Amino acid sequence: MSNIRRMLSLSTAMVVASSALAFAEPSAELIEAAKKEGMLTTIALPHDWCGYGDVIASFKAKYPEIQVNELNPDAGSADEVEAVKANKDNKGPQAPDVVDVGLAFGPQMKAEGLLQPYKVSTWDEIPDSIKDAEGYWYGDYYGVMSFIVNKDLVANTPKDWADLLKPEYSGQVALAGDPRASNQAILGVLAAGLGKGAKAGKEAGEAGLAYFAEMNKAGNFVPVIGKSGTLAQGSTPIVVAWDYNALSWAKTLNGNPPTEVVVPASGVLAGVYVQGISAYAPHPNAAKLWMEHLYSDEGQLGWLKGFCHPARFNAMVKAGKVPQDLIDALPPAASYEKAYFPTLEEVDANKAAVTAEWDKVVGANVQ
Image (cartoon, rainbow, N blue to C red; front, side, top):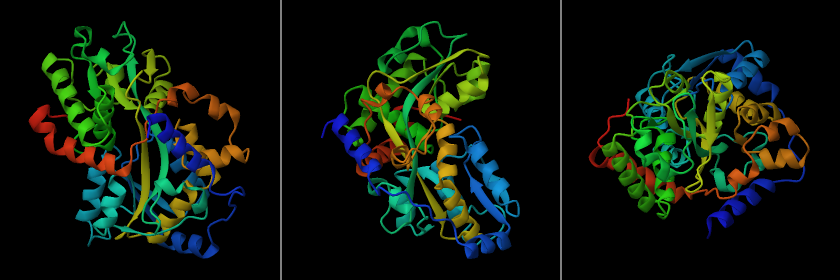
C-alpha cells in the first residue's frame, strides 16, 4: 500500500465511526466516586505539549475537588512504563494513574498486565485502527515529524532530512528526546530512515540509525534533549520534533527568537499517541473521569488548540463542532499529503531496532 493510500485509509477510518456524535456524559456515580478519591496522578505531560496546560486547567476547573498531581513532565514513554511497574504496590503520590504513550507502548503495557480497560462515552468515534478492542488503550492525537529552527542562528532553513547532514549545520541538530526511551525520538529516527527511502519498520529504523551515526560523526548532532528552552538559548538551534510541539514552542517564544517550522519534503511520518489507565491506579475513578474529559468535545478541542489532531477530529468536523480558526492554525493540508501512518508492527520493529542499537551504532549519550 502506498503512503498516500495508507494515510487516506486511516483518514477514512477516522471519519466514519458514527454519523451521530455521542453526547453521553460521565455518570453521576463516577463523578462522585472520583471526587471521593480526591486526586489524579499524571505523568509525562509537559504543559506546552499538545495544549496539555489548558487541558489540565479545564479539568481542575470542572472538578475542583480533585487535585492533579503531575509527575515528571519531561519523562518519555519508556519512563512511564517503568513508573507503573515500579509502583505496583505503592498507592502513594509516586504511582501514576494514567499514561499517555507512543502507539507501540500501548499493546506492550497491555501484554505486561500494566493497564486496565475502560471505554469512554465517545468510544465509537475513536477509529478502530487506533484503539484496543477491549479498551485497554486508545488513540488520543497525532501529528507529523518536523524541524523547528532558531532563525537567529540558522541562516538557511533545512527543507529535508538530507540537508541536516550539510557542514553548515555543524553542532546544531538535536532530537526532542532520548532515542533509547522517548517515543518522539524513536520515531524521529524512523522518519529519518524513511527520508533515506527505506521501508518502514526494522529497515527504516536501521537506516535511521545509520543516518544519525553519519550526522554524529560529522559533528552536526547535539546529544542534548531539544525543547523550547534549548532552542531559544541556542544549544540546539534545530530540533526534530512533532509538529504540534514545534508550533507550540514557536507560539510561546513569540518571535524571541524568530523561528520557522518545516515539515520535511520526504520521510513525512505521522505518529499516534495512546491513553491508558494503570492496572494499579490508586485513583481509578479519577482516572476514568480524566479519560471522559479528554475524549469530550472540550478535551478534544483543547488538544486541537495545542496543534494536535485529536482522535475524534474528523467526526467533530463533520458535525460542525470544530471552529474554523483552529483548523486554520494547523499546518496546511498539503503538509499531510505525503504523511505515512506506520502500522503497529512497523512501529514495534522500529522501536526494537532503535532502542537496542542506538548506543552501538550512533554512540551519542543523549541527555
